[in-house]
Length: 225
Image (cartoon, rainbow, N blue to C red; front, side):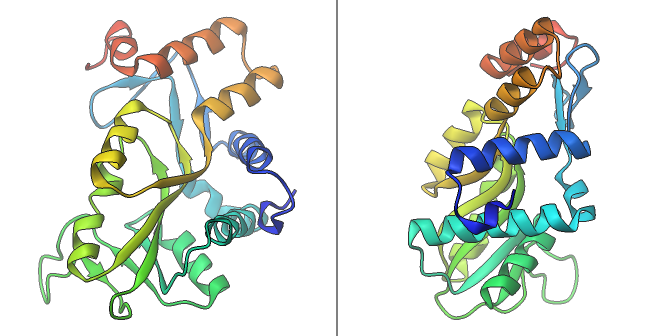
């Protein structure tokens, strides 16, 4: 399947991509042996979309799906911006496909030279989309917005390959006033895992419990709230 063709419904693209992320090990589900995130929280899922870089057909499909979303929403885009570091490669491929300038936003100002946050050259008053690989709480994703706004950009959307779909992210994007568009999500992935008999029913139930209340699930499994 090639999501970039735009011939499939968005739901089909999300389901296909979730299955592919599971297949290549970019998303690992481990409810019985939880992962510890940088925040100290424990979670039954870990996502590393950097692995998509090693699969040319998959990364082309992801690029095509991003392009389809821009077209579907009718956005006039002057440049593509990536988040550092995981969004840079996908932003570059999308910018190449659309024949547009590309830049990226550092997580912190450069410690020397011009101390840039935004690297690259954007058109004046550029209308941009931001490419992200993963959205968890939404805090790091929305942190790229202030330097772009300071540079005079209009941000149509932050677009991500995958989101955990947590309430914290919804709150962060609502506060930022910029929409989030994602190609697939944790709820879609759980459906794919259930229907594909990839997990026992008890494991699916544990994943659903984490999705409903990540903080309580973490505490119950020895992590931070």
